[in-house]
Length: 205
Image 1 (cartoon, rainbow, N blue to C red):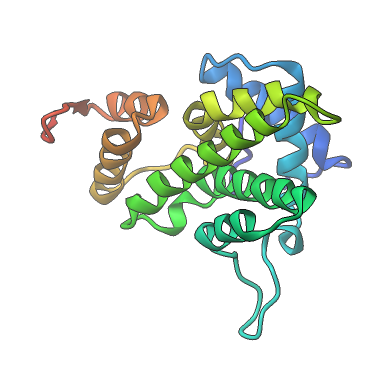
Image 2: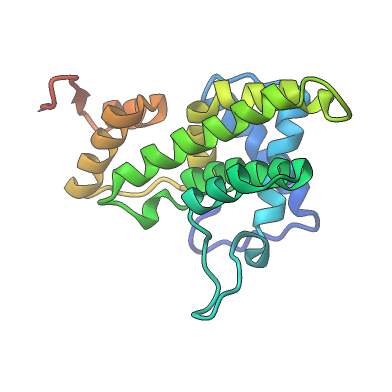
């Protein structure tokens, strides 16, 4: 259970916190992933818990590098190692932002859809290019991250959000999120709120 506003969560090891939180979220989402994939996601969450690892310094302050720019860098470089690292960062950032920072663009759902698509593609390329060579063990991890990107986003949403009273705008956003991405989590939350999601675009209460 997430802590209430009045509670202070203290952890000595951020990885252990995310390991437990992710295990709970995966169970809630009825989602199974391989141990290596779960370990990868835990490490990703622990890394980006430090803002300096997520945001990059620039003349106007720290910011997230656009995914399109990361993709361009990966496509333009002739260095295989740099291409791998850039695509990996693209996938990792897209997963983290979709799972933890989705509320940062409540009226820009195309960004959520875009992050999910871009992240899934990046992991897919990594899965293909890692099948042979020293990173072959990671190929199955990247393949699973690609295949289960949206359900993993739902699991990260569960970690990042506590139960809150939702306004009508929140309900509409949940519906739009379900409609654009097929999020099972958004569907369940709508049902709990007494809203029957309809593919036609109407909200039935």
